[in-house]
Amino acid sequence: MHRGLMADDAGLAYLALLSGGFWPCSGVRALGGGERRCACGFAGPLLHVHFCLGGSGAGDVCGVAGEARHEWREGVRRLFHQAGVDSRMGAGPSLAKLARWLGGTADSPLPPQLSLSLPPLFSATFGVWAASQRAAFVPRMFPAAARVPPRL
Image (cartoon, rainbow, N blue to C red; front, side):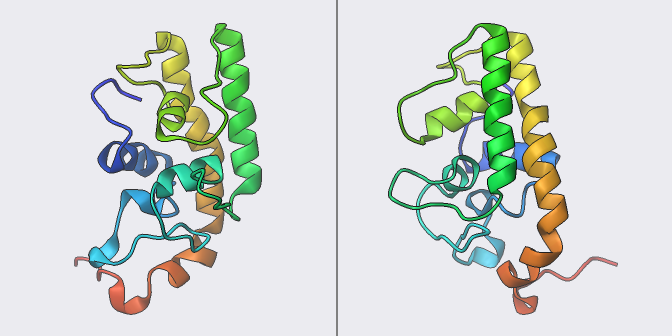
């Protein structure tokens, strides 16, 4: 991630918006102030960690985007290995691990080339999944009454 962005709701919203994966990462938005949920229906803390890493470590398991998540994880491991950097950060999912896998943070910097190659990988996996699944999930996640009408 860009060094000025944090792995919080606002920072992840930027990456998710650019990748086309904004809508399933419900942890980065709440439409109309409603309850934030993952595309799988999970409502709880660290929704972006839950969605991207398959769970938040609290016994929750994300049931959507499994193939995209697996492809992304394998790509992350490959890129870290090619750069000679260890991709592991503890045994379970965490916000720190997600931030590192999205390009690093000021507290956990990565080599520049590795840092620049991680966001496009996210876009090529989760972004492609999000684009292919949007029609199936969006109506269920955003009821018609909650949708903002388009500006004319």
